[in-house]
Image 1: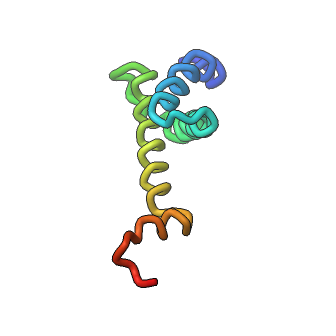
Image 2 (image 1 turned 90 degrees about the horizontal axis):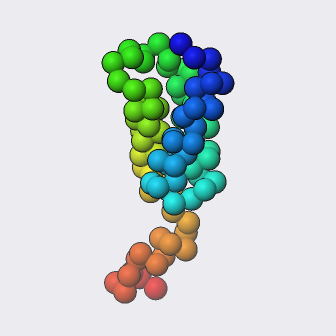
Length: 91
């Protein structure tokens, strides 16, 4: 198998492009790309080799992006919550 550095060099751009297409945010896509490879290193033993390594990495990236989306929905700035209150809210 290739070294971790070779794997990163070969697949990081693909993972980043995938995440950028989902997030539309360069900083977030970069952060999630780094986290993807961190998680991949931690769980490399679970890669069976049945499919492409890129597919496995993008699966990890997808799960991280979805987790980020769930977490970002839980936290809303107070101003946004006030905007959502609508006309029936007490004054």
